[in-house]
Length: 258
Ligand SMILES: [Zn+2]
Image (cartoon, rainbow, N blue to C red; front, side, top):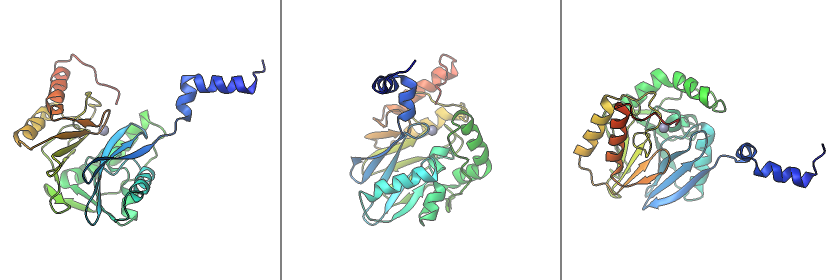
């Protein structure tokens, strides 16, 4: 049967899988609050991260998935400012937070991490990439590029306007929080989300304790940025996730695919 071209195109545009195949992934940079910009990246598994445009340099919070996505983000940053991208924080050893390291290193940015994340990357990067590629075969076999700066504990950047800290195992053994005191904003990466998410590497015993430690800090928080699904939340996201962990521990809820 010969289908006229116009009909064929309509069929092509209306069928789900074909449409998904032509939807190219996007990476957007949106203004969030003061010097803070939100990165919405739809590559591989949709991820939200942050960029801080300081008075004399830019700090990227989360290295993005690959050197290629890192370059796309750098190009987006260039539309905002010509200030140098001086530091990138690896907020987790998972691919979406450390996979872009090679690009950032190439352009001369410091890649900064807490030692727990550095050590985890060094030991487990290859297996993390292999595991992720099993479900996402289009993800490239990104070689390990370690952070160029490893802090033994918590650290501050941008004259104290960015604080990176580790409170214990959660989503992985080495995910950290990043806090912006002036904006009362907490970046929770993969640690806090509206859904339970992937628990494959999670420490289910320690996770709630880590979140209780976060609450005990009594940080003034107006906004929490979550690494997956919807980005912007209020401080109640901590209790919401504690509840999801509790239900998961009681076996009432299956893990979501991401
Ligand atoms: Zn994640």
